[in-house]
Amino acid sequence: MSLKTERIASNLVKEISYILANKIKDKNIRFVTITDCKVTSDLSFAKVYFTVFNMEKAEETFNALKNASGYIRKELAERVDIRHVPELQFVFDESIEYGNKIEHLIEQIHNKKKRND
Image 1 (cartoon, rainbow, N blue to C red):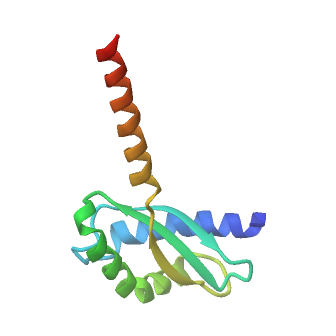
Image 2 (cartoon, rainbow, N blue to C red; image 1 turned 30 degrees about the vertical axis):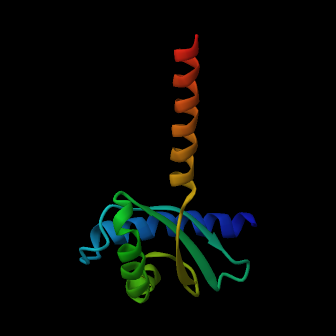
C-alpha cells in the first residue's frame, strides 16, 4: 500500500470506530472493535476488519454492520476529506482469536513441562 492509502485506511479505522461508538443505535453493534482497514489503490473499496467481545454474537454483529454500511459511508462522507468514500466490506478478524488459541496452547505446554520437572 502506498503512503496515501495507508493514511486513508488509518483515518477510516478511527472514524468508523467513532461512528460505531457514538452514532449507531443498533443493539447488535455493541462491543465492536475495528482492528484494521485495507483500501484498494483506486480507493473504491475498503475491507474493514472487526472483532467482537462476545464471540457468540459475531454473526449477528456482522449482519448488523453489513446493514449499516450505507449509513456509515454517509457519515464518513461528512467526516473524512476524500472525494469518494470507498465501498465498505466488513470482515471478521480471526487473528485475535487465533492468537488467543496459540497463547493457550503455549500455556498448556508450559504447565505440562512444570509438572514433569
